[in-house]
Length: 275
Ligand code: HEC
Image (cartoon, rainbow, N blue to C red):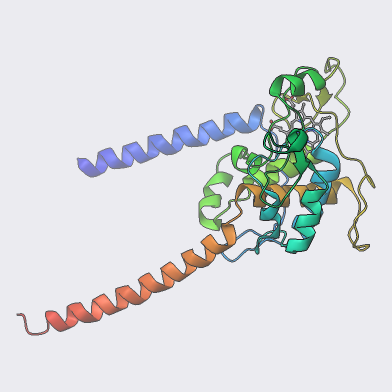
């Protein structure tokens, strides 16, 4: 009786899930082009050079509208992150003017301990400058956004330890500005983006080929490359301790395996003479 119920339950569950997947696939679902990331998988780490390039593009293009509240200048010298030298960070911070009531004239040069400066003095001023839309802070954007996938693809993510949905989202958003399809009304101040939910976004395409020049001449200066570097950078700002967490996780698993073996031997010893 019990078994029959369980089987019936499992069949019903599968039927609902499968049909749900089919409906989703037929409806508003937009495919995500998933990228290869250096930080994917159990042993993945950030690519220091890629983070530096991402930071450069953020600084030159995005920082005029988007803040990075949770990042202080000094974080840019963290190992496992962009890893700039302390002198570079000090020089970078000094290029910015920071509002400080205790300083002469209410302003002073930036120091490494300062947070990344806000692009606008208030949300209202930010909205007024952007046709009513608020450019969100990007420090945690890679955590705040993810991708949707139809059944059964999302099931595989549990087995492959997929955690790069935020980076994949940012990459797809930035690379999929397109001409609106025939008959699709695009109101003034809005732009057609194939990937954005509802396809209308109040951010003009921020990138174009060649807009930022990289020091390293072998890296392509294309929208595709900029977007991938930015996505990696925002993954780091959202999860700066990923590398140490993965290392610790690996050590813990090794410890637990060793501990399990030890406990097994102990158990055999203690029960050796029991009949
Ligand atoms: C001129 C101002 C401006 C610039 C420059 C700009 N953005 Fe935006 N961005 C906006 C606005 C406004 C929104 C809000 C759009 C909306 O709500 O429709 C936005 C939204 C976003 C979002 C959030 C999308 C979502 O899922 O909600 C991301 C991510 C983003 N921008 C990334 C970037 C990146 C990366 C750059 C630099 C390459 C950049 N932006 C440059 C104005 C800007």
